[in-house]
Length: 346
Ligand code: SF4
Image (cartoon, rainbow, N blue to C red; front, side, top):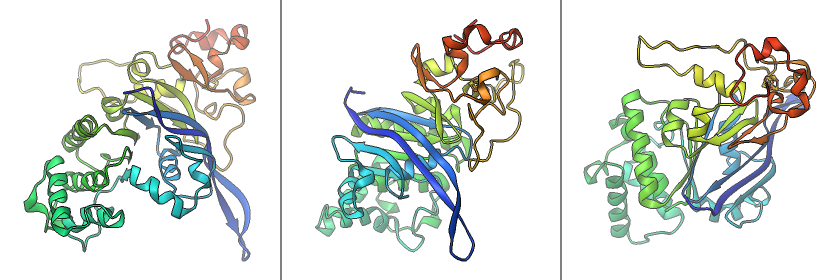
């Protein structure tokens, strides 16, 4: 990983309007993404994790402008704000930023052979204009993802889920992107196949010097591939840390609950679990103060009134009042007795 920032996202917001009546009057908004900020360095994999509905998929799609109408800034290398570009101007960046989708089957056209699916982006971006060179390139790409020439003329339905995801990766790689946004790339696959695809993505990253934004709800998968991890809750990042730090010293109560929920493969292993209570609140009307306060076992006086800000605490950035020295003397004894997250005021 190098120090050069490749993708910079600043205060990204995407609120989807809710319309009602014959005239489609906007009556409210779903705050899917509500002020997300992060950088991805060249050669880095940033994991973006959280429960379903936290807004992580919307972040990926807004960055690539597959969803329009967002606010904030997205800069690729030294580009202008991508959110201000026309779709025509975005074309140049689409070659440099690719996406791998969750469902490898629906992301491939069932009527196109694998060869046509992989060579389509090459035609769109006018790469390898000679048919024979294009074919050679497709074979190289298939080989780089563990498939081969014999698969060129087959159709998507002839492949397993894992093979289809390999085809999706080959297609994304065809235009030699610098960053790939992988949106839940393994969650539709069997566990044994998940490991193969994640390992393949790690090998390709080293081989082609790629960067990834790896979006997933399964923290054990995110841990395997990511250099740093951002945890999202209700459209916001609540904790951000290098992978090793996040797993050894989770600071935000939500991160801690997510880690405690990861199954341990040893039936004899005893694990203290504090399972999350309640459902994720409605993103149309997120709770006041800390959006996690309705489910947080550590909540105390300011939590339902004052919104915490993402603040550096050691190697982590955390959005939680437990770490705010201003509230040092007001954390109740009962909360401290709950064994507060590592590093909280005591
Ligand atoms: Fe829990 Fe309060 Fe921290 Fe929110 S700010 S995570 S409610 S302790």
